[in-house]
Length: 410
Image 1 (cartoon, rainbow, N blue to C red):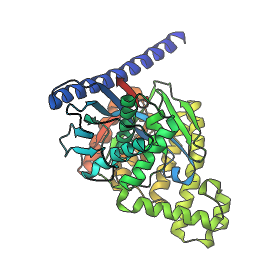
Image 2: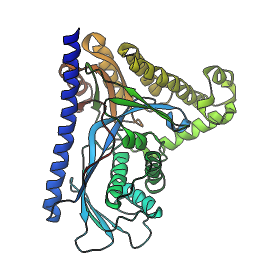
Image 3: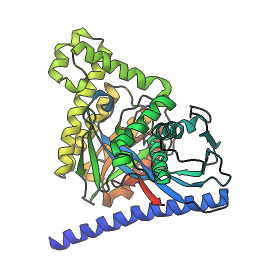
Image 4: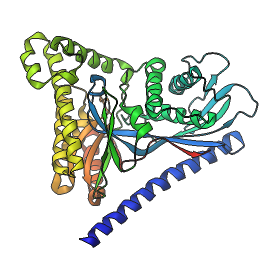
């Protein structure tokens, strides 16, 4: 028994070292790109992770619970004061997309290119608080997949916020920092997101999930120290846009359901209340509420299962979550369903405890709870069967719960 525990402890240390090495390498690569673009080394390097929501989908804006973890994919910014002294923040992206030029001599407003509205909103929030970073040259390098439901936008916002903290030498209370980033997404990007994405990118802790109460904003760390299990993320490579109206439509339907039930939010409703009020609302609105009420309950129970390392039970909650998102909330799609069906087919005997879509929906990623030692065979089977059934190549990677935003240099 002692030898078994020692071997598992050693694996945890190796996994932690792997994460550290990945981020250090990414930071070093970003520093080299900064040097190539701007002709001098950066003074600051900061990073903020993407996230995967293990369970608790579309509950955040209903005052419910969510259970995300930061992932080992990051937005990294390398920066230095502008050489010419101008009060302009220039952000160049390593991918080669159109750079952003943000003039600080006037109040920062939404602008072009479209992607720049995420950092623009954050910069405006800091400027309004008297935290002026001055002119900066910035090189952005992100490994968080775009449009995959892994919070590439929140990682960019939180990375920007962490950079401004580093440059000004002033830090915000973590909750206030996350809320500032959320406000930026609302007002500058036009996406009425909940608080989960920014909270986990700010407050993530290595080898822990974060149970977040979206009403009180209280957080509880949920340890996931067992190296025998990992999270496997499969990107369908079908992209979605949350700002296309479907997100806002679902949110409005939830508000209509809460009003019909006479509660402040669906957090306050029970399955019995909903069933008794079935005749008071449209059937579509009823099904939206049924998902949210059930998902809040599943999330709390899944956190209990993770604390107890009861992986089969956690997996069943994940499968149930997907069915609800597919049938009641109607935010899944063929490609997501295919991967979940493949995961169900592999089953516990093949190393898959549970699988579900994650993120806003209409494409993006699935998250599976898997046995670490069987990752290679599981990944191969999902990739092959997904390609056969859809004609699309899935992008698959594994992650352990990662740390939140950090200053790598400066």
